[in-house]
Length: 340
Ligand code: SAH
Image 1: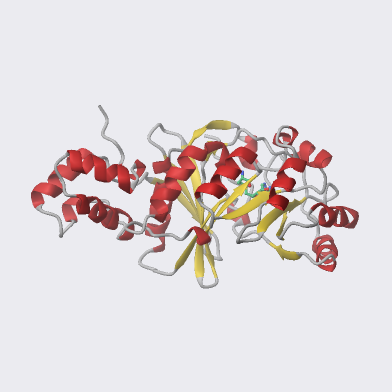
Image 2: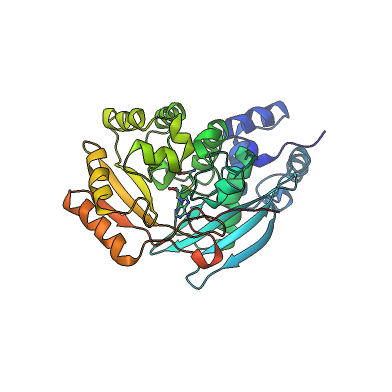
């Protein structure tokens, strides 16, 4: 039988397994420190564990992260990595340098079943969910890519797939990533971006109350949203917004709004958007559309983006325009896809 992959294990599970194999409990913490904190997945090099112990550990699990098959970078330092999975499928994961910190943009599914009209991942269809280990592995790989840089890392679940359709594996990955003996990433530095699958959203907020939520809204009313995002026919916008209105949370919710020329970028639509968000502690992220071959949309010009933003500001909303990084290497929002 194939050996289990260490990256699938939470610290608790590892403790139990290692205890059953005759190890003391602190060994599981040492394993987490080496594998995550030091990003070293080669037990034979772990100096503070006995040679017998190292050999036993090496034989119990499969250790390395999934391999990088290719990389593209742009002039600003954004790097898109192509990662090979054990079954031959591939995913993309993105490293985005920002002022004073780095952002890792992570995938949660191979492809995506939601088929949002403006998204390249949606156009490739759905292959399968990623396991917790395959999610965690992206973080280790991107950290290796960064080198010894020890600055702040933010995780954003904005790569391929809909995280809340894969809640079990997402939650397990978050538990592993946040473990203090491991990467020790604070939930405050993690954003889960979602179309809003209400049941799983409520679970996420309960299980990880400090995590940041970004909701991909993309339209100022339910009818246009349902046209652009078929999932919205089942996951009603009214219920979703009522949820955000009713639940007090520490952080404001970010509403993402992809601006599509002539579709959802008119000033009247900005006014409608402001009305829609009334009463919700919100921040709006405007994302001028990033083009992908075969998708029938255009990016609005700068003046249209500014006019849209001006209306929202006038209505008292906090607005950030995200001129996405990595467009020329197709690594910006909505451009991730692997067709081979
Ligand atoms: N499925 C999740 C996470 C992936 S998409 C979600 O929908 O939130 C991450 C963000 O990119 C979403 O806000 C989405 O609306 C946006 N996006 C998708 N396609 C885009 C495109 N072509 N240009 C700009 N942003 C896009």
